[in-house]
Image (cartoon, rainbow, N blue to C red; front, side, top):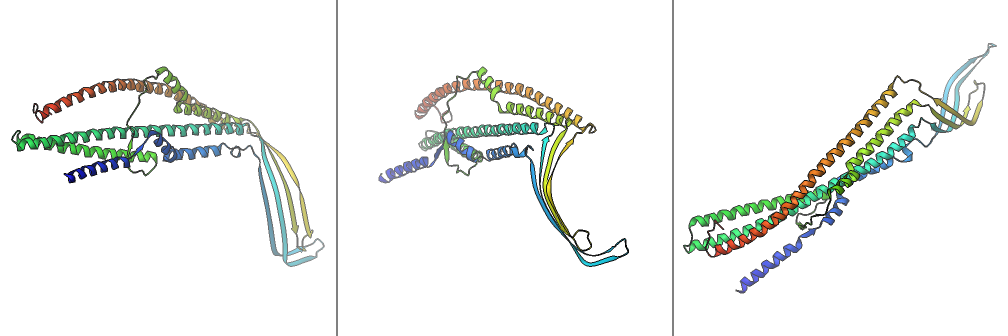
Length: 399
């Protein structure tokens, strides 16, 4: 009796230890881990950094360019010169040396407003990338909670199957006793064994599906977390939402719509950038240079040096480029029109999807309310059947 008591205590202790060892992954913790580690979100943030660099003033052409150049030349050759008076001079190993250095500065004063529109377009591209990163995060949230609640559903299903397995084992034990005392047939015993095996298989399969779902969640979390954890299974449903408010918020905040609006703005600037080729461009160039040369005896000058400042303006205007600018402007306008059409299409699609989702949500709220009542009725029916089975009023199969 003492051994049995100690065994029972040991089983209870191990069961308690197993429950304690399984940590609870809350929805808040899952969100935090996903934001820090999810691979897609990391890539989206890196793309945002690239867009931030591209919209910098250093990438617009508004700043001047400066350069320093220098050089040195050495020449050694044999030279012969013939003069008008008939005399000549020959020098072997005539050495010529020259040196130069310069600092140049170039700046485009006016380029037909192309830089201005390009800078504004880069800003809108950055805003577009921000919205794309936001959409990535939103889609990741959707994947996260879809996987999270799938695990919650599979966890509940596993518990239900485990309870069914325990009931089947109790049936089998009772069927064995009844068969041994001649109160039932071999058929009922075999049926009970089959039910235990089927319930055991169903429980093992459910456990495998649960572990697979947890590994899938780990991919979204971006971690190598062990599958030995539980999730929250309690869910509170919001019944106070209003469809009109949801529709207004959706049309105002939907990231896909906002992205299309940014694409329209980018297309508008693209039209203006191409139209800027119709205007002239004006540039400024200036440089300060130093030159020095050392000449051989055959040269008129033994040496020379110079330094000074050079500056100039350049004006260019393409009067006719074969119609390429006109073609680009026309195509840019068509692309802008397509973006506006896509925006209207997206609005219709999103409103339709929202309506379908809203109706489905309302239907599911009604179904869950009806199912809760069914659970109470079924539980009561099960309890009564269990008592009748113990009293021998129904068969094992009926139970």
